[in-house]
Length: 447
Image 1 (cartoon, rainbow, N blue to C red):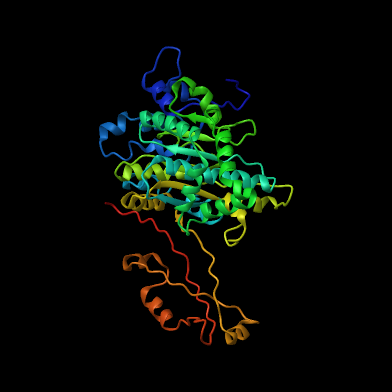
Image 2: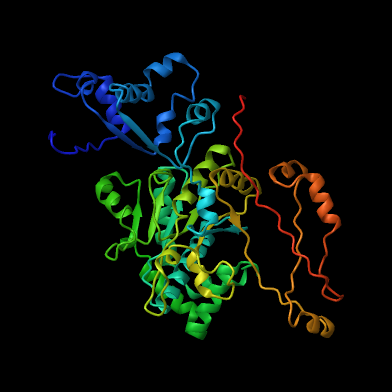
């Protein structure tokens, strides 16, 4: 180090723990830190709370959290700044941070304000992996060709998630075999089974037919065989290519990075962000559990960041460029580039638990929106010629969830009594009701 410079030391929690826990001759020790003024910058800092979660005093003294704390407290002028997207919800951890949070910008706020992709769920009744393989690569190809149409630089990435390293390796072989044996008939049969509410897949079919007409299925097969070659695949479990793969994973958005498909287990659940990940496919069929769905939700969060695209055909100012633009424009096909799609087997219990885990992470699956043409009679046409018209839609809310609203139940009942519902076949009296947003409150209550 140099005395007249700001010296930066990059390390990991585990490395610091090992260094100070097992002090060796000529290595850094706690004693060396006493006369130094240090600023600790801790990323993924929720890992520092591994012992705070525990009530065992011996664990508190011996764990890496205690060792790091001792290093930090070696000089009373030291500073520690922690950065994390996940504060554990255990009472001990919440108590520790109650008066220490400088700024909190939750993933929920991040998504709501338009800085993330919208997240959609595609459920497959057919258990075969081939259906999920095909659904994902069709969505990916659609986004790629759509981007090309508008002169947008985009290489959409697909991630296949397995439950073990062995299964991940096997699933990669199955995918390679699937692409090698893909035929036009497979494409046609797949699209015959698409639900009319599957907006993205239906729009992809419309796009392919419009662009390639009667040869669309054959053209798709050629594209998929060319774009999803083994050369463009990466398996994070391949230890032989560990260093090379790490570089590729962190440069997926670069023009010279040709990776289109990633196979993984749990390595990418945190500490990894990629903008051009658009499809995540769950290949496993394990019974739903909180641990599994939490990991899935964390992985979805990795790909939720918005891919900011630009084109010489249109432009946005810098502030608007990094936010979603087509939430309310259902007819604009570019909204496909603002969606992250999660593909899974239609397992009711798993999806239910995944929704709960997603909600805790601050993420929500969105339902596909369908345009509905409302037919009004001539009398109403005259009434609305110079006035606004509102479509009223009701949503059921469980009684236990009413406490989440600013508005009290009594106030709500009073408002409901005065609501004017715009029936289209009768005269309409306009009335706009503004319900405040749901407020999240984290009460520090001892379990």
